[in-house]
Image: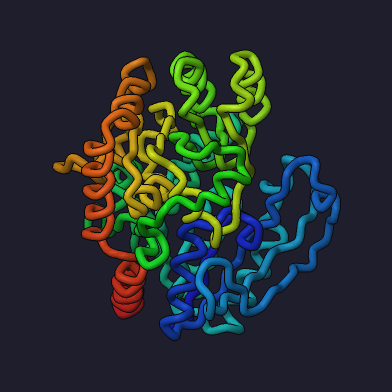
Length: 401
């Protein structure tokens, strides 16, 4: 089959996650895969000032799975700064139209909403190409307040007009249905993990030493984008006393983002510069080595309308590596682990720190929880299983056109 994926992130530079796994594995399975992304850069990046209607093209790209070949097309930018995303239609529409027609696309897989989502659905209707929407978050809650209502209108239009919706979890399915999606057109397809890559490994002592982790020191891991809603600032404030009283424990933060400067100030305020180690995002190939340094992995997202549907892939990767997880009670995660003792859920208060401390102190309990997490992820299936099922879904969607 010939797939076209559409999203509003920079595919070639974005941290590796399912928008790389799924298209790349479809490519390896013999399908032709094209990806239209978006020139998403930091505000200070000089490329924001490179304005052109002309798209860029990169062929046979691979980020996560060697041997995959994904052709990535990026529309040009016609304005700079924050308005860039909202004027993307001017360059996205002709690129989408030409790509679908010249490449004889069979199925479009859509992730984006405001930047290129409603345009994709409208154009696909004209071109008579079915669209599968992959629901991984609630788009309007991630945007500036002034645009929330417009983005929600776009969500409603998309959910009501695509051929099928593949939702991350039950909470997202319910949200899509609440905005008008037909229940029969929405399936729950949990994200997965590359189980051959993400599996338990002995701690890499050379890597640990290079990061400043002492021999025998216990490691609590936070990995991911430092969003304001990630809750890391609150966690460090709560965890500071424990770290000050337990020099044999450190906190490893792998990631960066908008809250980074605030996090660094809190670390300095508590004098934890030697016990809180910050490292920017690492390559996909180095992820497992970093994850397997940990004794406990934490997900500190603050429960809210923004986060309650979230099922972070980074948490599943830690579980697949046999690392026990303590998380705030997010509905999306609890849907995934429902009926199992695989994740410890606590509110982001002293009880969260107590749960982390208990796991650090009780290696038997920690090992049992880690093994249970690994078994749960394995039981849900690998990315290869997901992609096999997704290809069947696409084939059925095309047949029903």
